[in-house]
Length: 108
Image 1 (cartoon, rainbow, N blue to C red):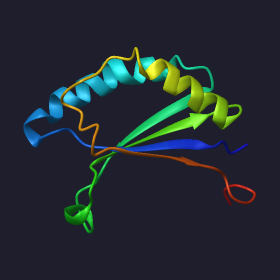
Image 2: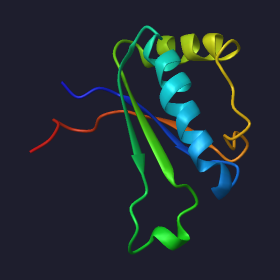
Image 3: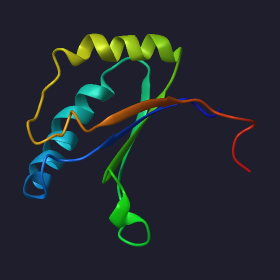
Image 4: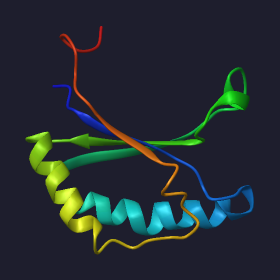
């Protein structure tokens, strides 16, 4: 069964802080998000070099696979976000987040 995903597009605040951004994301943020009831899986991606990369607004994509009512999971994320570890290497103002739901019968 294909599940809804919460997609987050993000960047570090500067190229010089990319290592710090990735350390925080991998060692703190993903652990805290994994503990949220209804977050069934998490996959991070980095933008590949090549066609289109130079004009991309974001370099990182994270997909949070949701299990259960997405509204309930998002409400729990909002509640817990107040106590989650923060990093000033993360460009919070420039990040984007959207909920995506499956269309059709799934993959071929």
